[in-house]
Amino acid sequence: MTTLKLPGLIDGHVHLREPGATHKEDYVTGTAAALAGGFTCVLDMPNNTPPITNAETLAAKQHLARSHARCDYGLHLGAGADNVQTAQALAPQVTGLKLYLDQTFGPLRLDDLASLVQHLERWPADRPVLCHAEGRTVAACILVAHLTGRQVHICHVSRQDEIELIRRAKEKGLNVTCEVTPHHFFLTDEFANTIGFGRSEVRPRLAQEADRQALRSNLEAIDCFATDHAPHTRAEKDAPNPPPGFPGLETALPLYLELVREGVISIEQLIDRVVYNPRRLFQLPDQPETWIEIDPDEDWIVRGSELQTRAKWTPFEGWTMRGRVRRVMLRGVEAYRAGEVLAPPGFGRDVRASAS
Image 1 (spheres, rainbow, N blue to C red):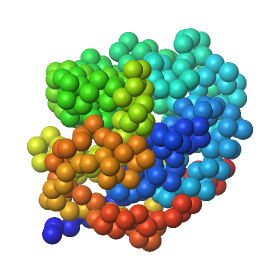
Image 2 (spheres, one colour):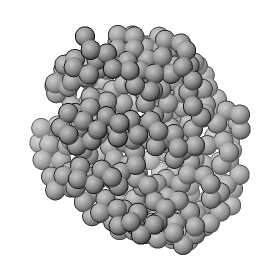
Image 3 (cartoon, helix red, strand yellow):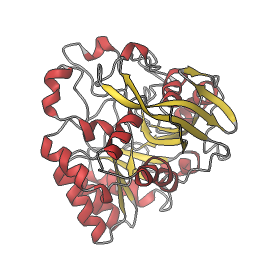
Image 4 (tube, one colour):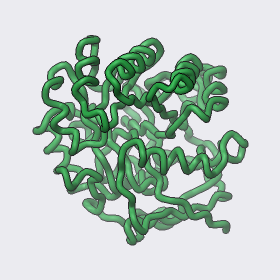
């Protein structure tokens, strides 16, 4: 068995569903899935029930995460029309301000330009701003960030026109970064027939082959890889009105390694995008004595029923993947070994704990 030792991976975009939707996932199961996938730190999105937009909802979520998370974590704050005046006071306690400019799962969405401008003007210039933006709203987000002197991070870029616009903005010196998910690197709209109508529902939607190829040919413009782990139950995904989202923490690393095997990216460039760039962009502390050990040559068949996530399904059901996490060390403690999660609930640390 070949063993490859890598730094603990960082995922800047997950939905662990606690509070409000723990039948889909919670911190116990979601961070177990993270460790099984090689992630030692995850940053959780704010579109919970209720949304995480003020001191009260943030404190409640901090308490839940502190009690239940098995790996280290950070919490993003949600931007709404009702917290334009107050969000910035919470910046030290969170890992970023998330703006939803397009339709997604949950109630958070900024529909008016004034709120977008005011949030960017008031949010501390040295703290991350993340945008769920698609198509034309990508351009709007970049322009407003430039006019207000802010850096902006575009989440889950999926289309050719989006990545080419971001590349051009970077070439002009604009302060924009972006991420791409593994499912947008590997799946297109044509896979919907195989995955099924409901289970292929995701935001941004699966795009066309030309979009997938454009993402692969513009790697220099992509700062981070992020799973957008967004679990729902099988019953919800198979219902007439399925919610959008895929579980993805446990299948991401072998897909990233496949990009290396295909020559799309080097292993060093991969580590930049799943460790060093997320740490720099989200201003995360180092994790001492933390690493993962993987067998890059182990083949395994993906079975949703065998995954740690509570969702127990995957859009990659039945795929043969190569590369598997064998061991995870987190802050000097063995947190995962050969399929068994060893870190107990509550072992994870909030990366902004000193401010909380």
